[in-house]
Every structure is written in structure tokens, then in C-alpha cells.
Image 1: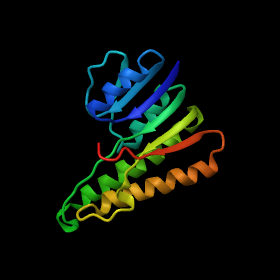
Image 2: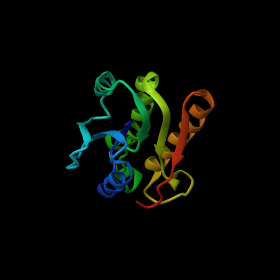
Image 3: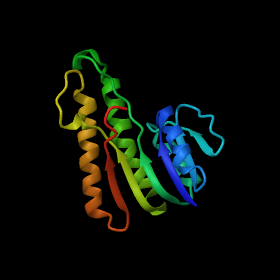
Image 4: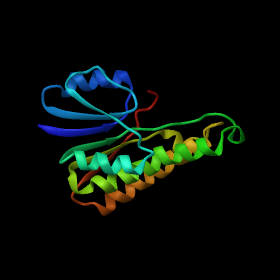
Length: 161
């Protein structure tokens, strides 16, 4: 049985996970939204809080697959979005992933999977900070792949969810 830790995902993805993973895996869902799937262990999270990440790391003994999918984005004119929201985007989309990998590195046995976005290479109006965060996460993952030879690193682009 594999232990899979997944940070946030949308409800239709949970249905797919249920169909493909239900009998062979222990899934821990780290999310702000509650789920109603009995076989998934749910942990309410605040990935912007480093103390929470450290506590989460203490609760989990072994991870076969760490799937990093939590994100936030504010889409409007750059100057209309508050600095607080810009920093929240960077913190959740990039810094929390760095902190999770760092705090759980000795527990990860097989894979780290980053869910990212093509927005890092396609210029779009109102997406500046979100796109920057996805650019950085891609480069973080690619460089980790060069550094961590005992863990497989994969980057998935889900296209338009």
C-alpha cells in the first residue's frame, strides 16, 4: 500500500482518484476544503504557516508520493491587487512547496510530483504574479531533479482544469 500526500485539488479530481486509487493506497488530503470520501484521510491546512508544515511533517511517517497541487491566484491589474495578495500567491504557490519538500524530504520514498501551469511561458494579461510563481516552481522542480537522485521528480501540467 502506498502513502500518498496530496495538497489541495478540485472535486472532479477526487472522483478520478477514487476510481483509480481506491483499493491500493492510503491517501492523505491536505486541504482547506473538506471532503466526503471515507477512505481519504483529511487534514485541514494552512500551507502559508510554517509551523503547520512542521506539525504535518511530524504526523506523517512515510510518503511514497508527494503531490504538490495547492495554489492561489488573483487575476486583475497588477496595481489593483494588494501586496498582501501578491505575497500570498508567491508564498502558497512556491514557498509552501519548498517548505513541504524540505520538511518531509527524509520521508519521501518514490516520487515528488509538482502540478504546475503553462502560464509560466504564455504571457497573459492580469496573470503576472501567478505566472511568475509557476515559472519559479517549474525551475525549482527541475533543479531538484538534478540534486535528489534517490527520488523521482515529475512535473505535470493539467492544462485547463
